[in-house]
Amino acid sequence: MRYLLLICRITAGLVFIFSGTVKAIDPLGSAYKFQDYFLAFNMDFLLPLSLPLGILLCAAEFFTGFSVLFNIRQKTGIWLLMLMMIVFTPLTLVLALTNPVTDCGCFGDVIHLTNWQTFIKNIILLIPVTVLFINRNKVIPASGTIKEWMAMAGILALFIAFSLFNLRYLPLIDFLPYKTGTYIPDKMKIPEGKPADRYETTFIYEKDGIAKEFSLENYPADDSSWVFVDQKTVLAEKGYEPPIHDFVLTTQDNTDITEDILASEDFTFLMICQKIENIKAGRLNEGFALGNRLSEENIQFLVLTASGAAEIMRYGSSHDVCSVDEITLKTMVRSDPGYMLLRAGTILGKWSWARIPSFEYLEKEFLKTDNLN
Image: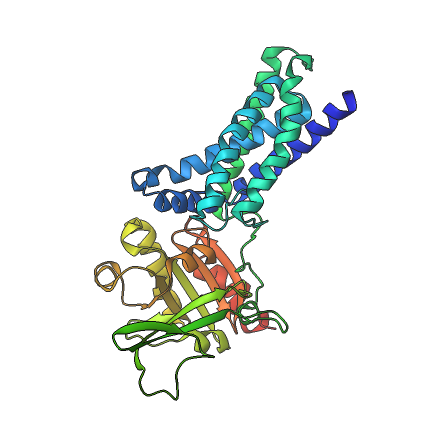
């Protein structure tokens, strides 16, 4: 029994520590996932709680996993493990049946699981958690109660500080497809042999007042007594989706400049604003000021946003503004605003609003001729 309990502790502890840690590395990603669920279930009033709940969830997962694995307030950790499994197991079953959001986000952007895979994972994980819960009274504390609580409080404080650091200065490890050093065009390609999306087209014809659906193989092409009414095309089977599949830059006059930017040998500095109207004026002005300095040196500066034309006119600047899908902007950089330097389709650097680079830094590290490869 001792070895069984040890295996259960290691299994449950490592899973929850891993889950909490990857969420803490990318707290905004967790917040976005909460937003997806709130919107899917028409709970918009909870949207302001998305970020606090994201940080609270990763802290709770790390606390319970660490507690169980290292026998520090282990009985408390076991109770929390069981409570979370009681909540999340039926919840993931509902999500698997309804599929409101395709990826549960339980392991952040490190491992993507479908809702059914998540539910099966929880059923399997419920086994060691149940064993630990049944035997919770056999736990022997490693030290005194006060010392254990002080140790866990200190560890939890450091963990939350780590999460807030990643929130302010960008994730310590970038699990997203737009990481520094990425050549964007390569991430947009479908590898040879990978299946493409398969669509099915249905034709609707009418004869003697009766409408009937036909496929591409049996529609009455040579029978003039049938009158064409309509056609429907639906996605029958989802094919391979490249990591970057929605990177499209559209100017305010509806010109697609994506290929021009990715092919350009010149530097392009991007200021990424999800919604310009939601960003503090001070942060906007800092970005625009850097843009003015770059423009003086003939460095292309683009503002990317999902805001509408009216908001762009109201909050925008004299700089070129491109419309980009909001989900793409959230994936490009976990900061609002965030910044990215491109050259020849390669991401040379990324920065958050809290660590906006100075022109002197950019010039020294990237823009000087002797720094170019």
